[in-house]
Length: 360
Ligand SMILES: *Cc1c(COP(=O)(O)O)cnc(C)c1O
Image 1 (cartoon, rainbow, N blue to C red):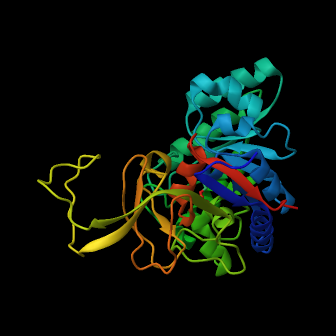
Image 2 (cartoon, rainbow, N blue to C red; image 1 turned 120 degrees about the horizontal axis):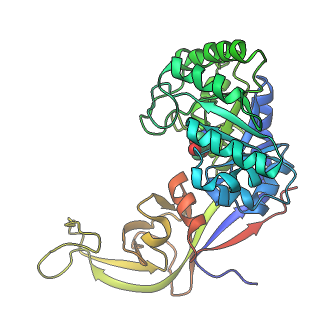
């Protein structure tokens, strides 16, 4: 099949390389990596490329995504606090889920009993970012105690999530607190915890600086592997590929147009009142991709002299006046992607996927 435009290209060889690099970085600190796959909508070919890099555990926020990994020999972790209404699917398609609610853990226990399996849970504590997790330390220990008495649920660890809602950066203080709570939980349960899960790609900088508190033995890494960047400060991780995922869109119109719209300005397609700068006549191109595909997230043209001037649902408007290339209808333009755009594009039904390389 030839790949229809717009398309997202996924370089599997580069993805395998990034996964291997991340495993190496984490191994040096005794940390196990779960690769987070929601950024590419859990496409199995891409997940397989990550496993070929030496990762043994895959994690996703949606059970529908983990379901696609059934044929893959890897541990599967559900990241988002499960829905009670999905308890059955959760124990079917994941080995471990991250939890904070007693009702949900009970529902998972019932579903696991029904299926005749054991389901692992990592209990989430909120250390200040204020997304998921139990806020009160006492209530955390009470939940751990109650959960440990269930027949088909096994408390496998403690975890926290940072730099998501409150943009709180992981540091020696909050992750130190996680390790202290892990010790106390292990005391209460009378057994060591398999997972002390110290966050996402925003914890990578601590690894690099050798400051990840001793005891943290697990990280859930999406961005670091997929984009090669850490997410506390947005820095590039050395020796990674930063262009595993790219968008390719096709030019459908090239016209000379004034930079100022003509007539009375009202509201644009999204209800905003636009402001324009008069730059005279410009050469404009339209590429056939839009906010329905990448939402309001950033994408960046690779070619010099190509500038995005705006987008509506299905049209990307580009100023190509400064470009040395004479673009014509049918030409393809390539864009680099941030995390949000990568996630949205991989989820769009209108964007095809082209795999490059083999990921071995
Ligand atoms: C998405 C997610 C991650 C991965 O985040 P990255 O910044 O991409 O590494 C980790 N943990 C949880 C709970 C998540 O929802």
